[in-house]
Image (cartoon, rainbow, N blue to C red; front, side):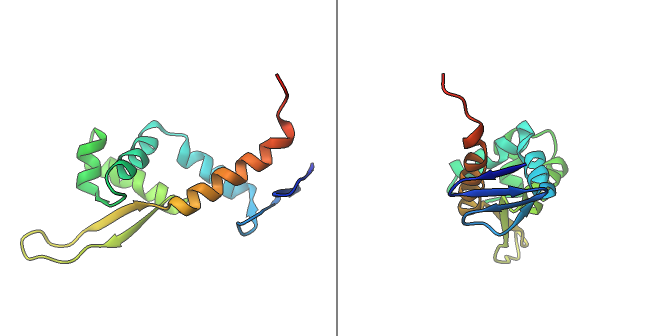
Length: 126
């Protein structure tokens, strides 16, 4: 299959997207897996609604997850897909230190635009 437009070229398993490095089918499948879960979508929404910087505990409480370990596992999948990033917070003697999570908005926008450009040739007019 070959799709050619100004933003995407697909040849076999190689996909070349404008503004993104070469992406293979496995990468797109992993992104699909990361997006294809209601709780992970909720996590992204909760982070974005709260100034794009939350700890695991805050995400756990605000997202209504059933456990903090489950929230951490979902965050690991989102981090592996490059949809969220983590940064170590400052250490305090009372609270210790922990990671703050942010949505990788730039990457999320590039993925959305790339997927739109791939699907564009297949759209039918109503």
